[in-house]
Amino acid sequence: MPSLQSVYLARHGQTEGNALGRWQGQLDAPLTALGRAQARAVAALLTQQPVDAVFCSPLGRAAATAQVCGDRLGLPVTTLDELAEVHHGSMAGMTPEEMERAFPGELARRRQDKYRWRFPGGESYEDAVPRAAQAVARVAASGAQHPLLVSHEMIGRLLLHHLRRVDVATALAGNHPQDVVYRVDVGTGELTTLRAG
Image 1 (tube, rainbow, N blue to C red):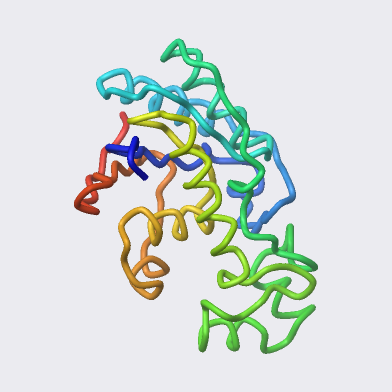
Image 2: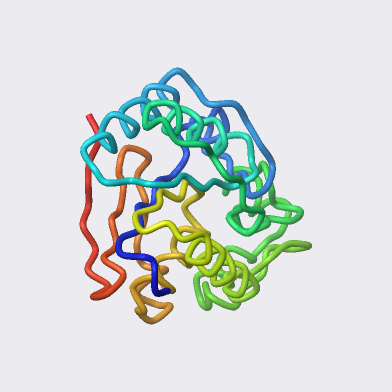
């Protein structure tokens, strides 16, 4: 990753699905009023940083958030399919309670091996690792030095795994609030939390 100096990771703003406690995966839902405000706050925060490129997931919630940032920063937005969220398969759009009713015991199995457990008909974290690595490689190949990547919580954990060169367990233990931007120093792996608002 010779060109990359720092990478900024943002999660999309709150969606209607988030507000209802639904796990969306690669389904989509529009941003709520709060989600739009979070996108604006993140964009304002990033005006104080040396962001020189904006990349986003193809899913509408991430694209909408990235466009707010790109417009504020005066930068075009590049969509990378590899930044899409981990695919939730048949569980997409469900609350945890609905998942348990439809797939008894699966969430308990997930807790036992979060990395290898696969959503029924979807992906595991392990499945998505190569995709996250490819996203980082494509961003590095762009020549950007301080890019912003707007994606999702689960794929974001795998981006941190690659960028910080930390073990998977460490990466999966984290979360990503929607009003937070993570800045990763690519040379050292140091993580800085930037809070919007």
